[in-house]
Image 1 (cartoon, rainbow, N blue to C red):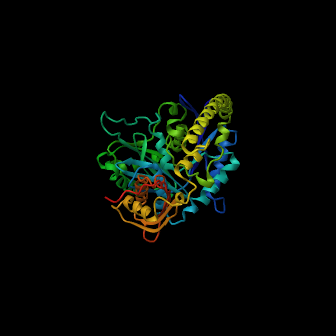
Image 2 (image 1 turned 45 degrees about the horizontal axis):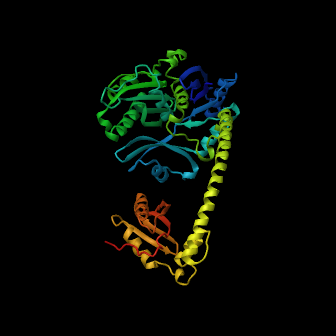
Image 3 (image 1 turned 90 degrees about the horizontal axis):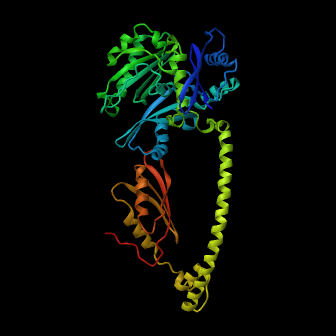
Length: 494
């Protein structure tokens, strides 16, 4: 059964909705709607309330949908963060420190998320979107009475990237054989806000949303677009790949003089956004630019697990109703799981019976062997090994390796090619605990890897690294069980 996905754009002049029916074979546009936002009046309600009232007018006749995606209204903050590695786990551990250093709020006061712009040559460029938690919570609370609990809330820029590569844009550029995909851009303008998204090969390479005066002066808009393009071009060698086309969406499609003001920044045409394929069948050509963001949100929902990860609904504001959409599938899967479990229990019963017979034979053989060797029958293998090794005597309680031996092994295994200070070293009979400081988070992983190469610290594990605000150093802890109490001395330093 197709899933009905609602893309909702709460614009400054109108609320717009696109309803998309998604299936495994593709999608169709089921409905498109727009409702004007009431003009500002002295002593009247604020803009957000008027936007929600317009959205309520769109949905008042019972527009049915399974899931919804909403664009964050108004200007939003975004940052590009560059990290010297591409491993997703390390990015998750590190990106929070970078974000906190770029915003004037505590990280606990904001909702934020990131998506990759470029991962290449040991470098990761990330787009990080940030919004105050109280602002996002107010938006969700305002949508709740309308029956809208969005699965995702996105800034406009990353959402607009979903238009590319989906087969909905007329005249979309294709890559020549053996060449990198051409870059394209879409500029969406609303009173008070403008958004520029840069896309190549269907993947977002840059996005920026910036405030704009209500008069929407063309000169100021062109200046902001040029500065955004100048910031984008140097990343990843993009200077050799100019923008092949710039599409105008929202109010940008109707601003006189804007195409001429931007033509010098683009190698190809600057033109209003036009649709093709299933989207063009339901969206009138004159409405395509203003419905672009709502359509992009619906297409982002159609991408499902293939969509980039950026979603401002994280943590305490996360979407929690996913189970309702898969309840039927869960029931069917549970039935099959019960059948598999029953078969597994029967199989396990047969194996246990066979293993019990083998265990009896092994116990009997162990008893015969220990009777001959130590003069006493042992059916427990641990007791038999202890008896053979002499455990239970005073000599057996003496450790085979001293703390000095363990310290020597630690010194041998610790890397020497970077700055490292160990503030605390605790060595007990069976445990090692380290606390120290280093100048890079990845150094902690290198220390753990080196220790795991030792027979004494084979299960070394990191307790995490925390960046100090004062000097930028990273505090860390490492723990390990001692596994070398075998009678052999640690290897000497070579």
